[in-house]
Image 1: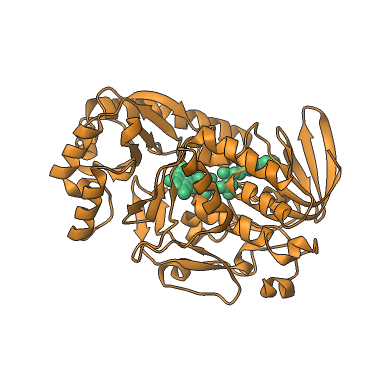
Image 2: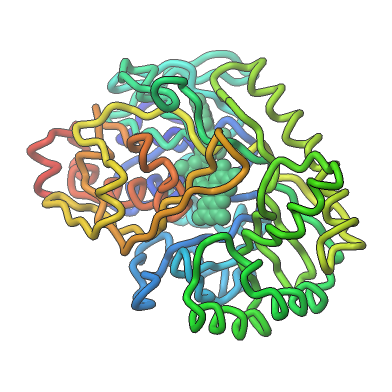
Length: 422
Ligand SMILES: Cc1cc2nc3c(=O)[nH]c(=O)nc-3n(C[C@H](O)[C@H](O)[C@H](O)COP(=O)(O)OP(=O)(O)OC[C@H]3O[C@@H](n4cnc5c(N)ncnc54)[C@H](O)[C@@H]3O)c2cc1C
């Protein structure tokens, strides 16, 4: 491994992989640093990729490397077709093991050097300090791209941030990602046909609900925020389930159900005791979820716990202070910024710390402004109001787009005047 790079990308989740390969394809010498043994981050838990399409028109609003990854997986039979989703535009199921493989290929073909088992513990404008079992080393980069889930590089290099909402600092709840096998989808579908309002928690017009139900007869996956009435009954019986719906995705051909149904409050990934306790809580809540599945949910009588995601899924971390902080109104009304770098399409869905359900808002796609995603040469996330925008597709776009921009190819430090030219 060299000790000098043009670009160092920290974090090997989907955002980091897109950023690193885009920069390397542009001719930069790139290092990707990841603390885990694998690439893909949170999405190796088997989550569907949401929002590639605009929901009202069905228009594809995402291209480039993200779409390339999906298409590569689809060619290998490792991703489903895109299916219509009335809330998020579209959903596509991805095989997590094949994803790890495709991401490694993507980086290798682009010529990215990769450092796994390596935690970045300090950062300056042009260098990072990396801890591994080998010890500590410092690696220089003309540009550092922060694709950690918690803005580590930004904070280590002095960025200001806020954590949680005012005034109580509470964050959205986190969930353990768990997949269950041996689902009888036929039985589940029959229930939905008789109870069409029980599929999703958001109000859907009758024709849209009919379209969704028709699609569910043959689709390879269906996104659920389901069974609120059954769950009410289960809670009345004393089951300590902490949600109002069963949140997840059912994959009929595989007879699998992937759930993000646990509810862990106050997770802070930068506090090791808190992080450990949260991890344990998330896993233990699965016992109640299994009871719910076995005792109450149609088609789940024989459900069997198959896998957990590699770690608890944390919905909200730090909000790095950026030149422009996106707010909820920017998302709920179609907004276009002069310096837009990426289009995104997702409704507001807040996993509130106050109650078991979701708060939702609807919108068309937004064009994300560069200024919101750039600070000191890093790519952090945006303001608290829009933390629900942290779905995969949205995260990987700011990673991929700025990293494929001319200033990365020129290996120049990031300047606002240059940003405007992108
Ligand atoms: C419970 C839950 C459910 C979700 N459901 C969906 C869904 O259904 N559909 C959807 O599209 N999105 C969903 N999302 C969002 C999606 O998971 C994220 O948007 C996406 O994974 C973000 O990708 P990322 O690369 O930015 O971050 P991550 O996937 O979190 O990757 C960050 C990487 O950085 C590494 N890292 C962190 N700090 C350091 C450090 N200091 N040094 C080295 N490496 C470091 C981590 O190990 C990790 O690999 C969900 C999120 C959660 C939490």
